[in-house]
Image (cartoon, rainbow, N blue to C red; front, side, top):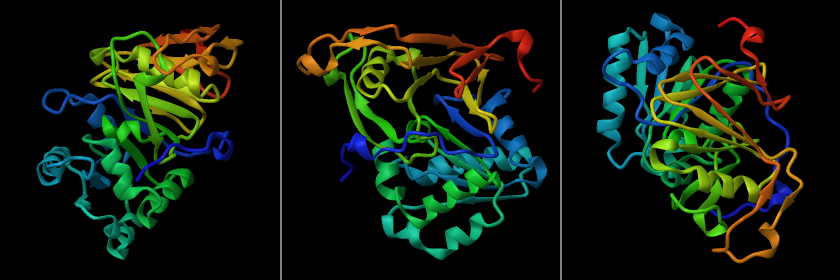
Amino acid sequence: MLQLQDQSLEPRMPQPTKTTVMVIGGAEDKVHGREILQTFFARSGGTEAKIAIIPCASREPVATGGRYFTIFQEMGAKSIEVLDIRERAQGEEPIWQDYLEGCTGVFMTGGDQLRLCALLADTPLMEKIRLLVQLGQITLAGTSAGAAVMGHHMLAGGGSGEFPNRSLVDMATGLGIIPDVIVDQHFHNRNRMARLLSAVVSHPDRLGVGIDEDTCAMFESDGLIKVMGKGTVTVIDPTEEFHTNQPYVGATDPLSAFNLRVHILCHGDCYDRHRRAVIHPQHRPPN
């Protein structure tokens, strides 16, 4: 069973990577321009791409994995494998780790983030993926539930449309690919601002990142978050927060927080998560 993490034991510094981690808010375009999926395909090597699809967050992994298999096949990927993992023990099978040796891209689908973590967290397979990301040998993407698991802290569920309060969020331990962030997906589409605010106020050493549908936050190796897609990426930075009533109020009482910084970014915008600053348009690095 996943349990809340003792904050004193948490890693506090971002783990460096040499490649891109694509965090997708869900419901990405799979039919028309497929801009986000095309970007993942290109960054994985294009027609030389060797892609692993991990659909185990889904209750219908064959259908979900098959849909992405067809998409990347139509794009012209050199090799595609669906890692149909339904039991935790499968994460220890050498066949999947062997396949990852030559892999250039890994795509985690949507579904249930608790299910995804229960099957993969701390398995040799996931440790292998994390290592390959840090070494810059693969491009990793996750959509919806596959996005929610990216941080050390994970939003496992909760309400929406209310004022910020502690009972609004259910937290669990994620996969820790980008441990210094808390990710929420389907963000404005499902009115989740209050729950991400609640999570960040409770974990002020983390950066909150809310991603709309058909929108991607691309975490680059230089610390930049680049935004692409049709919606927005909301960044909640608690670095300069100087007061909250969080330790003193009941679980359902409203939370107050002073001096949070909120940035709303759209396609083409950049945010430097190490400097905690938006990159002004004329200072953006070239794509």
